[in-house]
Image (cartoon, rainbow, N blue to C red):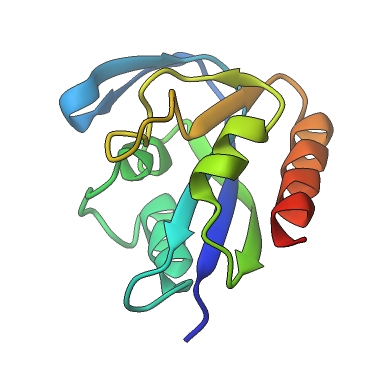
Length: 137
């Protein structure tokens, strides 16, 4: 089992609010988003497979904030960046260049957010990949 930290790159194809559990309605405009999570528990990176199932509609259960985003019809999972053997969820989430979505995915830590948005995919992916490289060093 491989454990570590991952970032999901997702596209919002339409603007609108997403009902996110206790957060309520979170307005998320069209654009690109990066969600940072940890895969340190049992199953490791199999958590990413679970996220893919939610995004594809194969799984309906919503446990985490990102499940609500991935399960929304206007959201598409585009890419996953993983860093094995590193517990860097918060460090990565705070260093991705973009606008943080307040309180998203960070109810169990002191971060402002674990979801970052940018208008352009390439700039977001470049930032995500660089932050993951830095976390591994």
